[in-house]
Length: 116
Image (tube, rainbow, N blue to C red):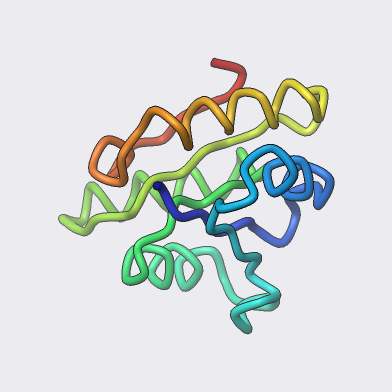
């Protein structure tokens, strides 16, 4: 199953919903791993090493840094951008689908924008 890292700004109710729907899901927050105050490039680097797909609401900088890593010849584990205006239930439903159907390799170096 795909492993996830939730960004500082991701609504915690989305993570709670994921854990409720998929009790075995492996999702940690940046706070859990000591990256609460880390810069976006550092979070992407950590997620790439682990590997963990990053869940974020941050459309302005995180996606840009992910694309910048690729242009520089680097990699990332994947980024899923969840709009802040998206209903929590729909976000959870889409993420459950991704977690259930995708592999880590499917998501590597990809940026997905919800809703699906």
